[in-house]
Length: 385
Image (cartoon, rainbow, N blue to C red; front, top):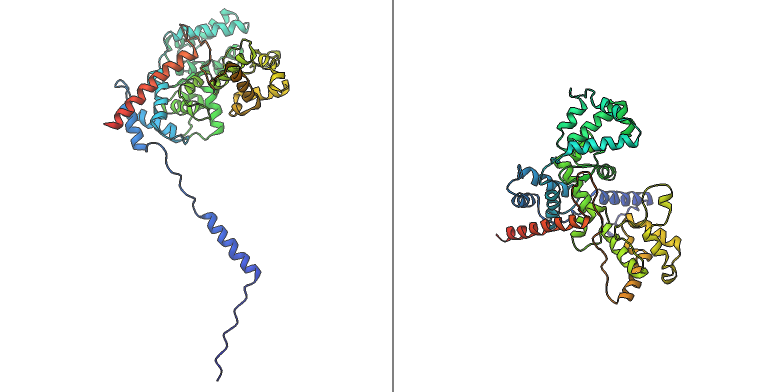
């Protein structure tokens, strides 16, 4: 009897094969990807190090340590000793580790600002005094609250009430709160408001971004973002400290301006502003940097339109990769027969009603850098204990 024949294999339909393939692909897509390798110190290590490095006078060291680490972690910035010390150095310089630091003579500064704006808007001084004599939401007159004001947070709230409750306030304050910076790192409120449009704020936003800036957690979060959360082509932290004061990429731009002055032979102030700011005719007219660049058009092989396009990238990452930047440095280095620095400290005199003596961006950057280096030295000593 012949052996039984094997049953013929069941032929799979093309549709079934496609279904199996799709199922396999979906399974692969649903599988979790690899977890990123952590960088920097772990949360417990970072908080312990910060608490150890904070000055003895600081109250609630654990709270400061937690908020400093969270400010970095929430923005995917590793808690390295360099990052931690950079944030701490700015906070110490700007506020002495106070969430809402008192400002000496703030009441007088506020009065001067009100008088200045009222005069510019053509509002009589008598009308201003009458408005300030009105009762504010907390029961005191606006004048009484101004006389007692000690911190920028308190002053900001007064101006908010004044703008919202007194019609005259809208006339000369134009819905614009004069308090523009605040918190433990004195970060720009306009920057903070722009930041939350780009990245989700990690805490519950109960009120406004402005109010968050005046808190410890918010001030540190936005301050760390302004200081560290951008691509700056720097090998030394001091240039980020200068940028924190003068605006992102100011040190890079000032280095370009210094090279441009050598290449052109014309005076160029290294202030980090490559094109005039503001609107109207002033923004359209060629500024000092632009005029110096145009004088090199033939030698660099670039027309003015191309130069202006590259200069317009001074407020964003990547300007150092433009043709204008590279050719200016190449030409200047041939003239000087040496390598030129790609970043220099901007030359800017600081102007503010709060400043009572002559200060500059360079002074600020060097002062913070000293604090930063001392912090790093203490961190290294702590690691070796």
